[in-house]
Every structure is written in C-alpha cells, then in structure tokens.
Length: 267
Image (cartoon, rainbow, N blue to C red; front, side):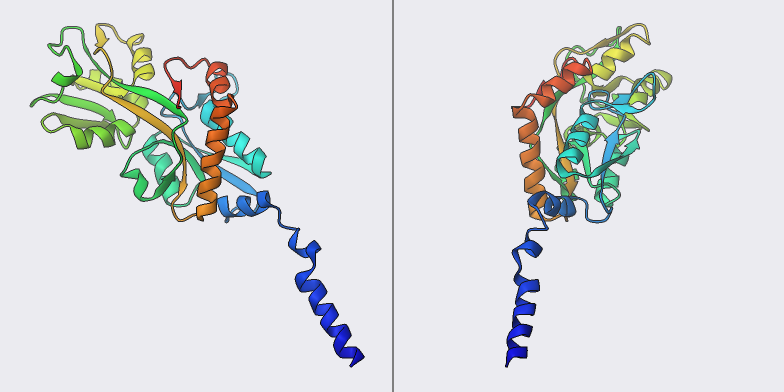
C-alpha cells in the first residue's frame, strides 16, 4: 500500500508539477509556432527590389531599412537569432515564404499572394507611379490602358499583380526585378514604366528626357506576412506586433533614420 502511494505521488509530481508546466513561457511558445523548423532562428525574407523597404548599406554591403529593423525587433522580442534571407525581387521573396524557406517576410498586400501567405495589416503606405518620355502623348494615369501601349513592370511585384488584373488593353512587359524596369523601358523603347514612385524618381536622375505622370495609379499597402499554414496564434502575434511597432513610433523612426521620403506610416 505504501509503495502504491509513493508511486502515485511520484507520477503526479512529474506530470502535474507547476515547475514542469511553467518551463514554457508565452514567448517561447509563440517563437516555436513562428519558427518551428529552425531551432532558435527566425528567418526573415528581405526584398532589396523595393528601396522603400530595404537597401544595401553603401559601406558594409549589409541589408538595411525598415523591413530589416522590424525583423530585428521581432527576433529580439521572441528571443530568437535573426537570419536574413535576401532576394533581389518581390516575387522571389514571396516564394520563399510560400515555400516555407523563410518564416516571415515584408510584402505588398495582394489577394493572389494571400492564397499562401497570411498578412498583417499594413505598416507603410507607398505610391505606385507611371513614368513616360517627355515627348509622350500620355498626360494622365487614365490614358495608359490603351492598345499598343507597353508597360514595363518588375516581375512578380505588387504592380505586376495589380496591373495584370486592371489593364485590359495595354501590354505588360516584365523586367527581371523592379530596379531594372526603367533600364528595360529605355533599352526596348517601351511606352510606360510602372513602379514605386521613389524608385522612378531616382531613375529620372540616371536618364534624360523622362517624366512622371501626375498622381498615382495605386496605393501599395506594405505588410508583414508568414506562411498561411502557421498556427493562428502566430498570425495573431505577428499582427499585434505590427500594430505595436506603429503605435510606439518605431516604424516612423525607422523611415526617418533611413531617410525615406514619400512613404507614410499606415493608420
């Protein structure tokens, strides 16, 4: 009888002991749900094709920008080592998350991408603009969707996805990456180039006799995302993290630090 009582106590202690249960804190649980395959690492997919989000440090060559700052903040909060998985285009960056080669990424919200990625709400809003030659007959964004008008876009970019749905008459010509759009536009003598307004403004300094059409053809909502197959608790945690970073002023400070103009913190 005494043996049975001691055995019961022994089993109860190790199964139901508060010490055993408390070993898993909320942060470690979420960290495991967020990055279940990497043993203490958070893999963040970084797209260098959008200068609003990320760029290379001119001195060190390391990735810098608001998306890198957010990735570091998230890894620190989860007590995980950060591993940056760097790509030169949005399409490749998206694919990495969809294929579970990265745990989180930074993308424009789009319904097509939403088939495999869970998005937070936007943290930054940026503008998509059109660029044409000075002598072009095109004067407004509404005039672009015409037969015989060829529009250069970065393959797999938010503008590619959006314009593929919206343009009914113009022809889309895809450059390998967003930063090479204007080069293709010039080399192939195309009629329009589409992209991030700030990228196109930078390209105006490289080429003569080009101009931007006034206004914007779309507002791009930049958000964080993770594979849709991740646990709902990971989705909720990432969404709350983004809202916290906006509310605390971290996103605004990062944009200021990296001297990013023309991008607004999302409400």
